[in-house]
Image (cartoon, rainbow, N blue to C red; front, side):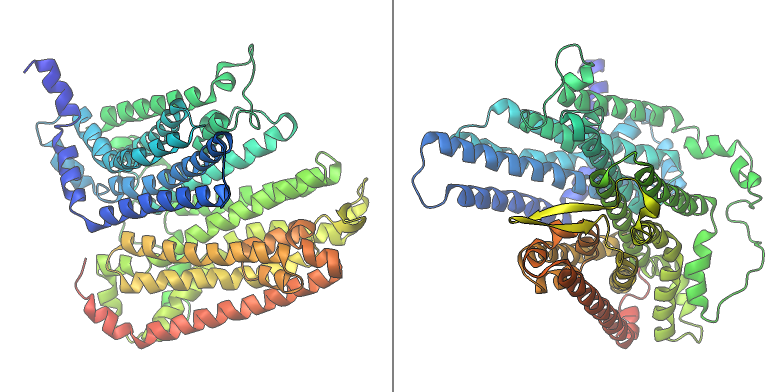
Length: 607
């Protein structure tokens, strides 16, 4: 075999690390289940779209081609969504399983070079994501039988999904090689990917309000790149003379993703044998410069300044001890400072007339919604690892030897996590409260006013920019909902032996419940009178939407009974929702306390 061909094979398909990861992962039932659910979701959406579009009547070839194109568009978007959601799940193992520096020390003693080690991890993890794409290719090919779906669009959509997965994989491997990220960074990595997609989409939607065409962010987001491919009339590309990235956003996204992947792989290979970025930041000292700047001791130091412990030590540990590292301190207070400043800036820009009521509402809804979503993900991650992490490192065995009862232990976890999250929860709630108080104060004499005319039938109704009672209703529902998310996370953390499994399970349960309740609340609020606005209060998402855009969220009730009746129904629904969440939290807590000893003994000794 020629030496060059052997070298290329050692980097790719015969790479020992890639072969090990593929063989071990292929034996896991979890991967088989994920692939099955992935294909089932695409098949169901395709069948549902075709049946709902075609109906029972006869169709000509033109209508059949249009229905086939619509079905392809739906499953193409679904595939990008599933790949974007599932890629971090598969690739997070590169961070979690290789977080220990000793793992890298062992690999560095093998005959493999740095590039082989890095590419082995990347290709081994990326194989399962690319296998999902290949498995769904026959399904996409079926859409061509209906016509209206060019093969070029199918291949381009697959290329977008593959490039997005490759970029996410390269980032995950780079984090693992840097030695900076540990197991706790897995969920932060997942949240960062989802937040990046949401933020770039929201900013692009804001930038194209006037032009309607592609923006610079189109080539940075796979969903936007796919939209420019599938909806060229609604989301047109720039004409000749414009920058290349605006004329060819799909090509720009693919090239940019692959270029980023190559740069990260090269940087990882160069820093692998030097200890990664962790050693570079530390500068060869026992204390990195940033810890010396903040007068923090070396990591793992046995002495720390004394602290005053709460009556419940478990609650204190969850609330206070999580700020023991510089990274957590900076991340938490950066979120609070930047989010608070941005919230104030929205209201100030609206008051000065820089943005109109429509733009003010859009920015406020996107900001509050994104912050609440991120905070919910953080709450689930923290709660889902609160017990399983202690079981893995043996701390739970020590706690069980103390006089702390199961009720005090679980109550302390719940109280401590809520206390830790409250300052961050104050950011979106404070932003909404500031906007509500501003409207209540009649805009401080803002030129142009703070109301708008909403058309209902032949008449119109004056609607405020934001419902003033939102300052009370949003905290009333969001705090119990956050406690519900924490309690669900604690449930799975107690009954699951590993942190990754507990996070995935808790995230799936909360997503399913919140998704169903939120969608039902949004649909009911718009189409059912009186009862609809009450159902909107059951979900924070539908509640925030009803507070910011009441004429759209509660259309039928406002049209038939007036705005005041809709607001009363929304307030009553919020009270009921708060009581329901509190009741569910109490029920889960009672159930966990009752089966605590049996569950702990069943999983005793597992790491």
